[in-house]
Amino acid sequence: MAAKSRKDVVHKRMQKRRVKLRKNDVSKAAKVAKVIKQGVHDQRKRKIRVKPRFMRPKTLSLPRDPKYPRQSKTQGAPLDEFKVVKYPLTTESAMKKIEDTNTLVFIVDTKANKNMIKSAVAKLYDIKAAKVNTMIRIQDGTKKAYVKLT
Image (cartoon, rainbow, N blue to C red; front, side):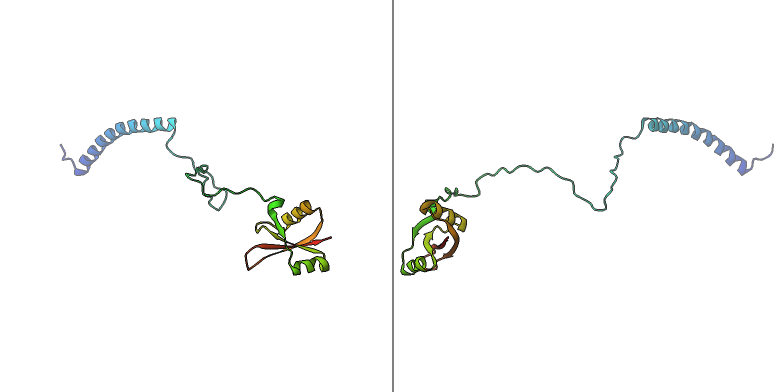
């Protein structure tokens, strides 16, 4: 009997291993085939991006639920014609305005605007005003209104 060369011995061992590997490979392949048939459910499908700019997603916005009112004082009643016009001014310069330029002079509420003054004078005195000029007096901080009559 001839002596076996080292090459032959290694070749025989490798064949034995291949047979073992093939049995294991078949069972592994069966497992993989089963998973492929079921489908992969753990991967998330990515949204296709169509715009180059990233916009943050809208999140939950709850309605306001204040614990206390932010304004401590409630707003007063709106100004009516009696509150808007306090009194007519009867100084010498006011009388001169009436005679020369057909203009009445009133002391009015500081919150009143020109439209309010115009309508209040029309309601109280039944006269039509062409225009109204106003100014805040520096001495006492009251508002003076010059009402030009038509």
